[in-house]
Image (cartoon, rainbow, N blue to C red; front, side, top):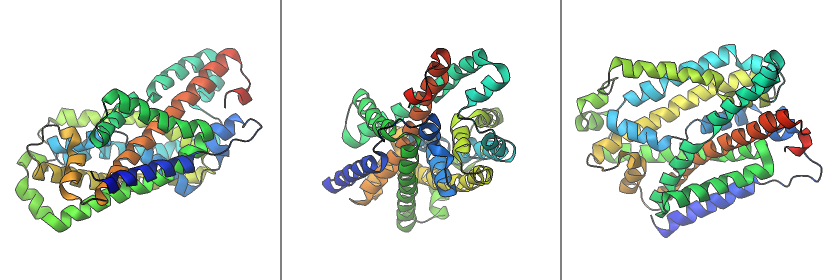
Length: 347
């Protein structure tokens, strides 16, 4: 990467802080305002924050496609489209209609405080973004040469800073920027690859047969189990939080429908770029770096920096969303329930 690429990244990080940080008023914000942004989430914002939150494992997507080809779509795409569709059809409106802040609020109203606290602990563990922090550290190592521990610490502190200052509103505002960048970066890379090497003919001539098979060389059982794993979407805290925060029931449902369409487009872009990485860099030692290595191979200065932003935006949008979910679960659903702390003291 060149000086111009690093300059682009620095401008992005500075812009992210400016967009994310808001001056909190002297009076404490309500729990609803801090955790759900006052339940005023519009349709575009709903789509942007849900879509961008779902791809923290972007380097893993590149690695899987590099190893197993188009089966990436049938393993990490289609099962989750189906699960998200089920959520939209049967749960989205009910979630918004409930007028609660968190999933444990529902557990409390139906089963009591003890069950709500137990459920809160499980949700807290579910939302800890450890895997995504590691992904961010790997990306920082590739971009800046930092050790993993250093990249993890710096990336996490940066992501958490503006979330602490502005709450859910900051998450949404920064996700709007990151949503645009993640699509723009992969569109630029995809167009560059198509124009330089050609399309389907190049791919089919350059890849092993298994990479073009739906199973990718894996067993039917291996592929099928992902359709069961994807059903965890039905209890996914990020989905419920966005639905609780939506301005209306209609936005909650439509937002997921439109998000599925954007996921399909983004999965097409990432899977296609992963196939090009396998075709152009067959001897790549570490497939988890397939996206960054491919970009370094084909993109000129400036566009390489733009693609680096796409990767950073994709991972950071997930880190900040799940960090916020974990923090709000710990403070609002565990500490608040155990010690009856006033709402104004947890925001």
